[in-house]
Image (cartoon, rainbow, N blue to C red; front, side, top):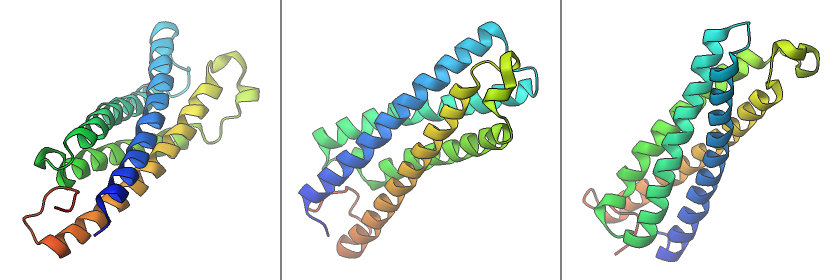
Length: 170
């Protein structure tokens, strides 16, 4: 089992990165939703843009909220069952799934669009492409975080049996 210090540092780095990137995605997706709600979505595939940008907004709100809760809670109460492996795995897995769905679907929608040639018909094209990029970055960080958590779960189970539920070694 890794030492308490190694787990605490790894956790802080991974969830700190997740939180930072999720906040950036939250800002971008929220400004896009606000802009498009005010000025209208692009004329082509209006409902598709609405759903795909909003799913990324939900994913970023989800991961920002749980990123704050898990990062601060783990630093303060790391030995408590409330901040154990399962309470990390569930929200991280849900966030990962939301980001994969949102990023993949928005990528498929914007893949063939050239922002330089779209002109005024597609306002904020570059920002939408930026949202795609930051969403994929967050998806990759969440995948790394999930691998870390699953590895830690197997190590903890092997050493402590089924009853060990926190990330720390006693």
